[in-house]
Length: 196
Image 1: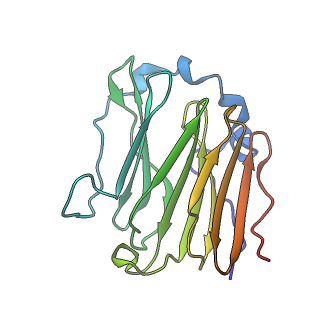
Image 2: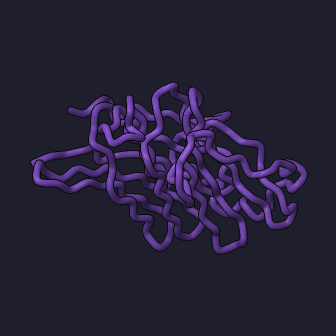
């Protein structure tokens, strides 16, 4: 049922990002505001009502914002907002695929750590099950993201970020069993999916 849970780390990966983005946790406030000069980009997937499930955004305690959206034939795109510069970062692809977007992107945050659930698959926006289920974590400057990919899975239903921001748990529970994957700062993903 599960793929290999391949970790894909997007955008100029540093060793710190590959093991959990730990060293950037406190660097966010010192970001160079000159790199923020873009407008917020929205999904090009059409939706009849607002808000669109193909766009998601949240505000961090320090006033920054993090936004993700699905882009056709591109994948999942992220931007972050600087209240100092009053502008957004350049859009960056954190997961590249030509698959269709699924409905909904879920974001949760605690202490500057952001956990994200997103899915892709053929006709997924119409209710078909996903072919790729993503568990993503961003910390600090939000320039680098840890991405865990599970193939041919019905998708994560819940993401919980511990209050200190050092642990993120992605889980799914159904009549067929329980599955989870855990991200820890400094370690990345571990405790792969299990079913009874």
